[in-house]
Amino acid sequence: MLASRVRQHVNPLASHFDYPPALPAAWDEVLADAQGLPLVVDVGCAAGGWMVALAKKRVDVNVIGLEIRRPVAKAAAAATDELANAYAAWGNVLPERAPALIDALPREPALITFHFPDPWFKKKHTKRRVVNPGLARALASRLAPGTGIFVQTDVLELFEAMDEVWSSTPGFERSTALPDLFPGSVFASGASTDGSVNATGVATELETRCLARNMPIYRALFVRSAL
Ligand SMILES: C[S@@+](CC[C@H](N)C(=O)[O-])C[C@H]1O[C@@H](n2cnc3c(N)ncnc32)[C@H](O)[C@@H]1O
Image (cartoon, rainbow, N blue to C red; front, side, top):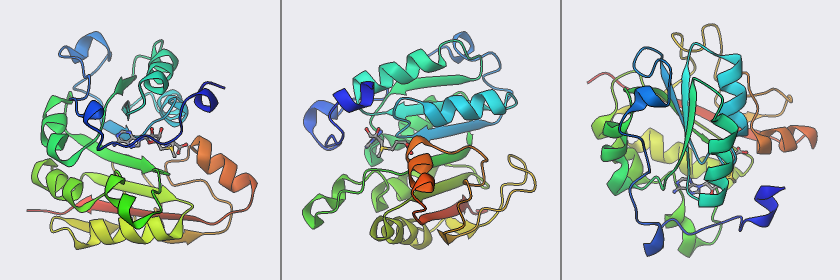
């Protein structure tokens, strides 16, 4: 309901979105075990559906969601309010701010997810895509070896672009597993047409819609490679 009243796409490069993510200074006040649990960061968490479901299913991880649209971020914050292992913030994930963003987290992330990011189809708008070469380079400079990057989308053109971004950025390599975080799960690369949920075991809102319509979903996992 809320999302339908909020403009769907916003331009992350607009000057009024050029602000640092609104992250708390005292993580212990918002997460019960801020430093102890492995951290998952969901970029473009919208109203927080996936992060809330993951946090409830996996009380052994912390989930932080970042969402550029302020009213939607507020809805995500309300949805995570009662959870000891989830926190949603208003934030624009931009390459130039990514190092400071990583530094402001309670600990090194174990996984960063980009579920169904805005596709920005027009050629002149592709620079607005949240997954872009600058962001990948910035994250490569800050993430610890082993950190996972998971992307999924129903837009083949966007998938190919995201796949190219991570595979061509030094410091990332394709992977099929995050054994410490999701033991036994296989993160298959490429098109999924068998109706399966992504390997985290929790579907996002857009993923659920795609699965209901038997649409292919394109997925890939990369990890920060050893230095
Ligand atoms: C198409 S929605 C996908 C929502 C959800 N992840 C899902 O799979 O159902 C993409 C979301 O990313 C957010 N977003 C776009 N650019 C962003 C940016 N630079 N930083 C943070 N969030 C962004 C949008 O506002 C939107 O909520």
